[in-house]
Length: 499
Image (cartoon, rainbow, N blue to C red; front, side):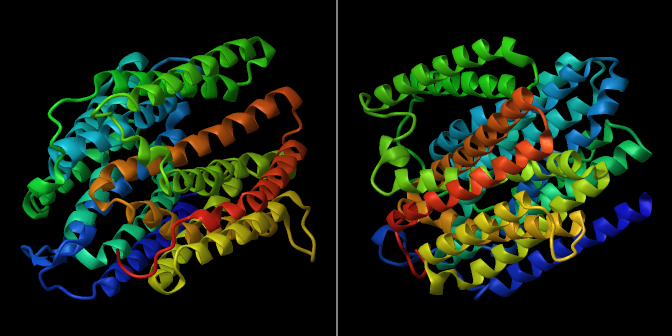
């Protein structure tokens, strides 16, 4: 078992080294950066150590990505160690998802009001301290609460990291922001490996303790190397739209709870509760949209959500990448249910798609200024739909079930990797001054698409059973849906070259 973990870890390490190598190659110059965003005349600013800054923010994103998957491997150990039920142990994952989704737009707004650097530093502190607290807990209930706080810190990384790069990386910002898409798959791959190693050889508490030295390292380097925020990038609004935050937060919370209930196999008795919560979510979200149209300084500007071009980009992020992320999480369950694979073998299927996502994302970054945004979106959609279709079909050409599913998963990951840089930049180019909020909205769109996919699929499974056949049918439906939504691409704002 140790040898297998070591081999997988070597693969993940190779991916990390390759990613860092590409970062070095993408650095076109180390001279002072000039800012020509939003039509302003070019004015030289203080030099920024771009590779160092990128390494700092990428390390934070990697830490957050690892933490989103590493705890899943420790659920049984947490249950045994804290003498609790598996349902309560599972709430350590649910609380993290809730806190993350709820705090994403809040973090984006705070970054625009107080500055990306300050909120990034605060997020690192909150995440690190909460991780230490999680590792020391002796009861499940404070552990669940601290997981929500930990997620609140992690939710600040993507908006602030994106804002820092957009503000200080000049004409190279599109390439560096695009590289974020290769960080998250690496974290998703190595998280379960680290989790299995810690639980198997030490303690479940180490899946939280590992964040402490990493967080301290990031904080020290960030204090030294992250550039100060420019005053013109900070919002002039001096108050927070509390009512807008409350309406959006309660709507998202009710929706997440409904999704969580649908995702549990409680039978028909839970269905009315889920429908009721979905109704509450719809009312709260409707009131939120009504509110932001009527106030002078809304929590989120309406145009960033559904305005011209912005609305289409958000929809593409949700239906193109968000649904894929959710579907990928179902592949191990499908492999076990249809082909009776072991847990270890089914888990390694995600390694194939993760590597494909990283490699294709890096290729897409290198070619984005020549291809523009629409070509990668079309190409990635076709490859992803084909991958979903192969997942549903039985193996042929003499392939074993493992090789067949690994190849199909690889295609899904490759398609998603091709899409990531284009979908990430398509929104940011429209309003670089709102980069933190746009990054938060993109991540929120991905989360909504992913959570909805998993919740609907698991709800169908709970009522129909027969995991293999049911998930095969779901993959066919997803392939058809992916083809049907491809025409959305023609409304994505096109861009060639740095923005």
